[in-house]
Length: 360
Image (cartoon, rainbow, N blue to C red; front, side, top):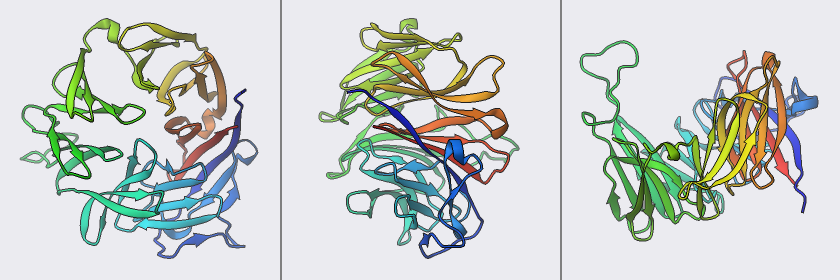
Protein backbone atom coordinates (compact mmCIF):
# COMPACT_ATOMS: atom_id res chain seq x y z
CA UNK A 1 0.00 0.00 0.00
CA UNK A 2 1.37 3.35 -1.02
CA UNK A 3 1.98 5.88 1.76
CA UNK A 4 0.94 9.45 1.09
CA UNK A 5 1.84 12.38 3.33
CA UNK A 6 -0.73 15.16 3.64
CA UNK A 7 0.09 18.51 5.15
CA UNK A 8 -3.17 19.17 6.95
CA UNK A 9 -2.63 22.09 9.29
CA UNK A 10 -0.11 24.48 10.72
CA UNK A 11 -1.45 25.71 14.05
CA UNK A 12 -0.20 28.90 15.65
CA UNK A 13 -0.97 29.66 19.27
CA UNK A 14 -1.88 33.29 19.84
CA UNK A 15 -1.57 33.62 23.61
CA UNK A 16 -2.98 36.11 26.09
CA UNK A 17 -1.80 36.79 29.64
CA UNK A 18 -4.46 35.96 32.28
CA UNK A 19 -5.96 32.87 33.88
CA UNK A 20 -9.48 31.59 33.26
CA UNK A 21 -11.05 28.83 35.37
CA UNK A 22 -13.86 27.80 33.02
CA UNK A 23 -13.37 25.83 29.80
CA UNK A 24 -12.74 27.91 26.70
CA UNK A 25 -14.89 27.24 23.66
CA UNK A 26 -15.50 28.96 20.38
CA UNK A 27 -17.59 32.12 20.34
CA UNK A 28 -18.91 34.22 17.49
CA UNK A 29 -16.57 37.04 18.55
CA UNK A 30 -13.44 34.95 19.05
CA UNK A 31 -13.49 31.42 17.58
CA UNK A 32 -11.02 28.87 18.94
CA UNK A 33 -9.72 28.14 15.44
CA UNK A 34 -8.88 31.12 13.25
CA UNK A 35 -7.12 31.70 9.97
CA UNK A 36 -3.44 32.35 10.55
CA UNK A 37 -1.18 34.85 8.76
CA UNK A 38 0.18 31.97 6.68
CA UNK A 39 -3.09 30.05 6.56
CA UNK A 40 -2.99 29.25 2.86
CA UNK A 41 0.20 27.25 3.40
CA UNK A 42 0.35 26.50 7.09
CA UNK A 43 -3.11 26.33 8.62
CA UNK A 44 -4.87 27.87 11.61
CA UNK A 45 -4.52 29.90 14.78
CA UNK A 46 -5.71 28.50 18.10
CA UNK A 47 -6.98 31.20 20.44
CA UNK A 48 -6.30 30.36 24.10
CA UNK A 49 -8.35 33.21 25.53
CA UNK A 50 -7.43 34.14 29.10
CA UNK A 51 -5.44 31.00 29.85
CA UNK A 52 -2.16 32.84 29.32
CA UNK A 53 1.04 32.28 27.39
CA UNK A 54 2.81 28.98 26.84
CA UNK A 55 5.78 28.11 29.06
CA UNK A 56 7.09 25.01 27.31
CA UNK A 57 6.82 22.60 24.40
CA UNK A 58 3.30 21.44 23.41
CA UNK A 59 2.72 17.68 23.21
CA UNK A 60 0.34 15.66 21.10
CA UNK A 61 -2.19 13.67 23.10
CA UNK A 62 -3.86 10.40 22.16
CA UNK A 63 -4.27 11.47 18.53
CA UNK A 64 -3.70 14.39 16.19
CA UNK A 65 -6.81 16.25 17.38
CA UNK A 66 -5.56 16.59 20.96
CA UNK A 67 -2.78 18.79 22.35
CA UNK A 68 -1.45 19.44 25.84
CA UNK A 69 0.14 22.81 26.60
CA UNK A 70 1.78 24.19 29.73
CA UNK A 71 0.21 27.66 29.99
CA UNK A 72 0.89 30.48 32.49
CA UNK A 73 -0.62 28.73 35.51
CA UNK A 74 -2.38 25.71 34.01
CA UNK A 75 -1.87 22.56 31.97
CA UNK A 76 -4.31 22.77 29.09
CA UNK A 77 -5.96 19.97 27.13
CA UNK A 78 -6.99 21.21 23.68
CA UNK A 79 -9.59 19.24 21.73
CA UNK A 80 -9.20 20.53 18.18
CA UNK A 81 -12.17 18.61 16.78
CA UNK A 82 -14.54 19.80 19.53
CA UNK A 83 -12.92 23.29 19.54
CA UNK A 84 -12.58 23.18 23.32
CA UNK A 85 -9.89 23.93 25.92
CA UNK A 86 -9.93 22.41 29.43
CA UNK A 87 -7.53 22.83 32.35
CA UNK A 88 -6.07 19.52 33.52
CA UNK A 89 -4.02 21.04 36.36
CA UNK A 90 -3.98 24.57 37.85
CA UNK A 91 -0.91 24.81 40.10
CA UNK A 92 1.70 26.12 37.64
CA UNK A 93 2.57 22.56 36.60
CA UNK A 94 4.66 21.40 33.64
CA UNK A 95 4.04 18.77 30.97
CA UNK A 96 7.27 16.77 30.67
CA UNK A 97 6.43 14.01 28.19
CA UNK A 98 4.35 10.94 27.42
CA UNK A 99 4.51 7.28 28.32
CA UNK A 100 6.38 5.00 25.94
CA UNK A 101 3.14 3.35 24.77
CA UNK A 102 1.39 6.74 24.38
CA UNK A 103 -1.22 5.94 27.03
CA UNK A 104 -0.85 9.12 29.08
CA UNK A 105 0.70 12.56 29.41
CA UNK A 106 3.32 12.91 32.16
CA UNK A 107 3.29 16.17 34.11
CA UNK A 108 4.85 17.71 37.19
CA UNK A 109 2.34 19.51 39.39
CA UNK A 110 0.56 19.86 42.71
CA UNK A 111 -2.81 18.23 43.31
CA UNK A 112 -4.45 18.20 46.76
CA UNK A 113 -1.30 19.90 48.16
CA UNK A 114 0.86 16.99 46.95
CA UNK A 115 3.68 17.95 44.58
CA UNK A 116 4.86 15.21 42.29
CA UNK A 117 4.76 13.55 38.90
CA UNK A 118 1.31 12.62 37.65
CA UNK A 119 -0.20 10.84 34.67
CA UNK A 120 -3.23 12.08 32.77
CA UNK A 121 -4.51 8.75 31.45
CA UNK A 122 -6.12 8.88 28.02
CA UNK A 123 -8.35 5.82 28.62
CA UNK A 124 -10.05 7.27 31.72
CA UNK A 125 -9.41 11.02 31.29
CA UNK A 126 -8.21 11.04 34.89
CA UNK A 127 -5.03 11.89 36.78
CA UNK A 128 -2.87 9.43 38.69
CA UNK A 129 -0.06 10.28 41.09
CA UNK A 130 3.19 8.47 40.27
CA UNK A 131 5.85 9.76 42.64
CA UNK A 132 6.34 12.60 45.10
CA UNK A 133 8.96 15.20 44.16
CA UNK A 134 11.05 16.88 46.91
CA UNK A 135 11.97 20.56 46.84
CA UNK A 136 15.35 21.74 45.56
CA UNK A 137 15.84 18.69 43.35
CA UNK A 138 16.23 18.48 39.61
CA UNK A 139 14.24 15.50 38.35
CA UNK A 140 13.60 13.50 35.18
CA UNK A 141 11.13 10.66 34.71
CA UNK A 142 10.51 8.12 31.93
CA UNK A 143 7.62 5.66 31.99
CA UNK A 144 6.61 2.55 30.03
CA UNK A 145 3.63 0.68 31.45
CA UNK A 146 4.39 -0.10 35.09
CA UNK A 147 8.10 0.64 34.71
CA UNK A 148 9.53 3.97 35.83
CA UNK A 149 13.06 5.35 35.53
CA UNK A 150 13.57 8.23 37.92
CA UNK A 151 16.54 10.60 38.18
CA UNK A 152 17.09 13.38 40.70
CA UNK A 153 19.99 15.57 41.80
CA UNK A 154 20.39 18.68 44.00
CA UNK A 155 19.81 22.05 42.35
CA UNK A 156 20.64 24.34 45.27
CA UNK A 157 22.86 27.27 44.22
CA UNK A 158 26.51 27.23 45.33
CA UNK A 159 27.66 28.97 48.48
CA UNK A 160 28.61 31.80 48.26
CA UNK A 161 26.23 32.86 45.43
CA UNK A 162 27.73 33.83 42.11
CA UNK A 163 26.57 35.37 38.86
CA UNK A 164 25.91 33.40 35.69
CA UNK A 165 25.55 29.67 35.19
CA UNK A 166 27.35 28.46 38.28
CA UNK A 167 25.14 25.70 39.66
CA UNK A 168 27.18 22.50 40.08
CA UNK A 169 26.57 19.68 37.59
CA UNK A 170 25.92 16.11 38.76
CA UNK A 171 29.16 14.22 39.18
CA UNK A 172 31.59 13.01 41.86
CA UNK A 173 31.02 16.13 44.01
CA UNK A 174 27.25 16.42 43.36
CA UNK A 175 25.56 13.06 43.93
CA UNK A 176 22.71 12.10 41.61
CA UNK A 177 20.21 9.32 42.26
CA UNK A 178 18.88 7.14 39.45
CA UNK A 179 16.75 4.04 39.80
CA UNK A 180 14.10 1.79 38.24
CA UNK A 181 10.77 1.61 40.07
CA UNK A 182 7.94 -0.88 39.56
CA UNK A 183 4.76 1.22 39.75
CA UNK A 184 2.67 -1.67 41.09
CA UNK A 185 5.01 -3.35 43.61
CA UNK A 186 7.07 -0.18 44.34
CA UNK A 187 10.18 -2.36 44.16
CA UNK A 188 13.24 -0.20 43.51
CA UNK A 189 16.42 -1.11 41.63
CA UNK A 190 19.26 1.39 42.11
CA UNK A 191 21.32 2.19 39.01
CA UNK A 192 24.24 4.20 40.32
CA UNK A 193 26.04 6.63 37.98
CA UNK A 194 23.67 5.95 35.10
CA UNK A 195 20.95 7.83 33.26
CA UNK A 196 18.07 6.98 30.95
CA UNK A 197 18.45 6.82 27.18
CA UNK A 198 15.40 5.22 25.54
CA UNK A 199 12.93 2.36 25.78
CA UNK A 200 12.64 -0.45 23.29
CA UNK A 201 9.46 -0.36 21.21
CA UNK A 202 7.62 -2.80 23.48
CA UNK A 203 9.11 -1.36 26.69
CA UNK A 204 10.80 -4.64 27.67
CA UNK A 205 14.29 -3.12 27.61
CA UNK A 206 15.86 0.25 28.22
CA UNK A 207 19.07 1.82 26.99
CA UNK A 208 21.03 3.54 29.76
CA UNK A 209 24.17 5.68 29.63
CA UNK A 210 26.96 6.13 32.14
CA UNK A 211 27.31 9.50 33.84
CA UNK A 212 31.05 8.98 34.34
CA UNK A 213 32.33 7.35 31.15
CA UNK A 214 31.46 6.74 27.52
CA UNK A 215 29.55 3.52 28.02
CA UNK A 216 26.06 2.35 27.12
CA UNK A 217 24.04 -0.35 28.89
CA UNK A 218 21.06 -2.55 28.03
CA UNK A 219 18.72 -2.97 31.00
CA UNK A 220 16.29 -5.91 30.92
CA UNK A 221 13.01 -4.87 32.56
CA UNK A 222 11.76 -8.36 33.53
CA UNK A 223 14.94 -9.40 35.35
CA UNK A 224 15.83 -5.81 36.40
CA UNK A 225 19.44 -6.44 35.43
CA UNK A 226 21.96 -5.06 32.95
CA UNK A 227 22.42 -7.71 30.29
CA UNK A 228 24.86 -5.97 27.91
CA UNK A 229 27.08 -2.91 27.55
CA UNK A 230 29.11 -1.14 24.86
CA UNK A 231 32.19 1.08 24.96
CA UNK A 232 31.20 4.25 23.09
CA UNK A 233 34.83 5.31 22.69
CA UNK A 234 35.00 2.82 19.85
CA UNK A 235 34.98 4.99 16.71
CA UNK A 236 32.80 2.43 14.88
CA UNK A 237 30.10 3.14 17.47
CA UNK A 238 29.84 6.85 16.60
CA UNK A 239 26.23 7.90 16.17
CA UNK A 240 24.01 10.96 16.26
CA UNK A 241 21.11 9.05 17.81
CA UNK A 242 19.66 5.63 18.63
CA UNK A 243 16.25 4.14 17.91
CA UNK A 244 14.49 0.80 17.81
CA UNK A 245 13.04 -0.63 14.60
CA UNK A 246 10.92 -3.52 15.88
CA UNK A 247 13.27 -5.25 18.33
CA UNK A 248 16.51 -4.18 16.62
CA UNK A 249 18.56 -1.30 18.03
CA UNK A 250 19.68 0.96 15.19
CA UNK A 251 21.81 4.09 15.06
CA UNK A 252 21.84 7.04 12.72
CA UNK A 253 24.75 9.34 11.98
CA UNK A 254 24.96 12.51 9.89
CA UNK A 255 28.28 13.89 8.63
CA UNK A 256 29.15 17.46 7.67
CA UNK A 257 28.24 16.84 4.02
CA UNK A 258 24.68 15.79 4.87
CA UNK A 259 25.24 12.07 4.39
CA UNK A 260 22.83 10.04 6.57
CA UNK A 261 23.90 6.53 7.60
CA UNK A 262 21.62 4.01 9.32
CA UNK A 263 23.33 1.04 11.04
CA UNK A 264 22.47 -1.98 13.10
CA UNK A 265 24.06 -0.79 16.33
CA UNK A 266 25.08 -4.22 17.60
CA UNK A 267 26.62 -5.59 14.39
CA UNK A 268 27.73 -2.33 12.75
CA UNK A 269 26.06 -3.38 9.49
CA UNK A 270 25.12 -0.41 7.29
CA UNK A 271 21.41 -0.69 6.57
CA UNK A 272 20.82 2.56 4.66
CA UNK A 273 22.79 5.53 3.35
CA UNK A 274 21.32 8.67 1.87
CA UNK A 275 22.97 11.87 0.61
CA UNK A 276 20.71 14.84 1.35
CA UNK A 277 21.07 18.16 -0.46
CA UNK A 278 20.62 20.14 2.75
CA UNK A 279 23.17 21.70 5.08
CA UNK A 280 23.03 22.43 8.78
CA UNK A 281 20.74 19.48 9.54
CA UNK A 282 19.45 19.73 13.08
CA UNK A 283 17.13 18.33 15.76
CA UNK A 284 16.57 14.81 14.47
CA UNK A 285 13.56 12.79 15.58
CA UNK A 286 12.56 9.21 14.77
CA UNK A 287 8.97 7.96 14.47
CA UNK A 288 7.91 5.51 17.16
CA UNK A 289 7.87 2.63 14.68
CA UNK A 290 11.49 3.34 13.70
CA UNK A 291 10.82 3.76 9.98
CA UNK A 292 11.03 7.54 9.49
CA UNK A 293 13.57 10.22 10.39
CA UNK A 294 12.56 13.88 10.71
CA UNK A 295 14.91 16.87 10.68
CA UNK A 296 15.29 20.45 9.55
CA UNK A 297 17.85 22.09 7.27
CA UNK A 298 18.47 24.58 4.51
CA UNK A 299 20.24 24.67 1.15
CA UNK A 300 23.26 26.86 0.40
CA UNK A 301 22.15 30.39 -0.56
CA UNK A 302 18.56 29.40 0.21
CA UNK A 303 15.96 31.63 1.85
CA UNK A 304 13.96 29.07 3.83
CA UNK A 305 14.35 26.41 6.49
CA UNK A 306 12.94 23.06 5.36
CA UNK A 307 11.23 20.45 7.52
CA UNK A 308 12.19 17.09 6.04
CA UNK A 309 11.15 13.45 6.22
CA UNK A 310 13.54 10.60 5.39
CA UNK A 311 11.75 7.28 4.89
CA UNK A 312 14.21 4.62 6.02
CA UNK A 313 12.32 1.75 4.36
CA UNK A 314 12.23 3.36 0.91
CA UNK A 315 15.50 5.32 1.26
CA UNK A 316 13.78 8.49 0.05
CA UNK A 317 13.54 12.07 1.33
CA UNK A 318 10.50 14.35 1.24
CA UNK A 319 10.13 18.05 2.06
CA UNK A 320 7.18 18.48 4.43
CA UNK A 321 7.24 22.28 4.73
CA UNK A 322 9.35 25.32 3.91
CA UNK A 323 9.56 28.08 6.52
CA UNK A 324 10.93 31.38 5.15
CA UNK A 325 13.77 32.77 7.26
CA UNK A 326 11.78 35.97 7.70
CA UNK A 327 9.09 33.97 9.46
CA UNK A 328 11.54 32.35 11.90
CA UNK A 329 13.16 28.93 12.02
CA UNK A 330 11.46 25.65 12.81
CA UNK A 331 12.63 22.54 14.64
CA UNK A 332 10.76 19.25 15.16
CA UNK A 333 10.50 18.21 18.78
CA UNK A 334 7.68 15.69 19.17
CA UNK A 335 6.94 12.86 16.77
CA UNK A 336 4.03 10.48 17.33
CA UNK A 337 3.66 7.80 14.67
CA UNK A 338 2.98 9.88 11.55
CA UNK A 339 2.46 13.19 13.30
CA UNK A 340 4.96 15.90 14.11
CA UNK A 341 5.03 19.09 16.12
CA UNK A 342 7.23 22.00 15.11
CA UNK A 343 8.26 24.80 17.42
CA UNK A 344 8.74 27.95 15.37
CA UNK A 345 10.74 30.95 16.54
CA UNK A 346 9.07 34.26 15.83
CA UNK A 347 9.69 37.91 16.59
CA UNK A 348 6.65 37.67 18.86
CA UNK A 349 7.74 35.64 21.92
CA UNK A 350 4.13 34.69 22.66
CA UNK A 351 3.71 32.82 19.38
CA UNK A 352 4.23 29.10 19.07
CA UNK A 353 3.64 27.30 15.83
CA UNK A 354 2.77 23.68 15.33
CA UNK A 355 2.99 21.69 12.14
CA UNK A 356 0.37 18.96 12.17
CA UNK A 357 0.33 16.41 9.42
CA UNK A 358 -1.15 12.99 8.93
CA UNK A 359 -0.41 9.86 6.93
CA UNK A 360 -3.16 8.25 4.88
